[in-house]
Length: 202
Image 1 (cartoon, rainbow, N blue to C red):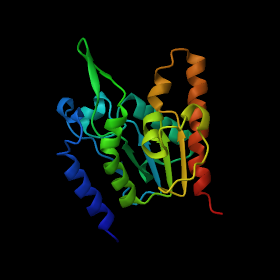
Image 2 (image 1 turned 45 degrees about the vertical axis):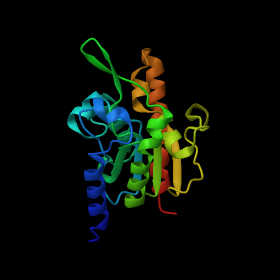
Image 3 (image 1 turned 30 degrees about the vertical axis):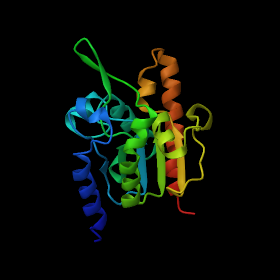
């Protein structure tokens, strides 16, 4: 078995722990690096860690992660067979009483973390990359990419054979109307079904 990828990812993970490339590290509990199958054909890229991820040190373990798990299952994608990470590795937040509320990273913070993300892609060499939300899309597909318009469409990219973007699960959780939230979830499942379709033997 080729262990070079595992070694490379572990080295990156250790190096990222001491990253000070932008100010976000100062208010975060820890760096939250990617995790999953080091030889995955599929990589999911989210925005940044949330409160629970910041505490546990793993991506997509909070409410958005649970919704993503459900969507992946319905789309026929095994989460155990993917690598999952974020475009930004530290939790950006603002206080609201006793709560820490998510705050969207700005471009300079996305840019500061981009070398970590690209190094993960270089190490894993996925066949498919799915960007979850606008921040991930901006990190890999450019600032002009519009998830609301171009979601669910394959994009030509140097990073993988198949690359596309869809909604971030947290955006679905913020929808208050039950029917609208169900529609958004079904749309996420449809988009994620592109993964299984791309992996089908030709």
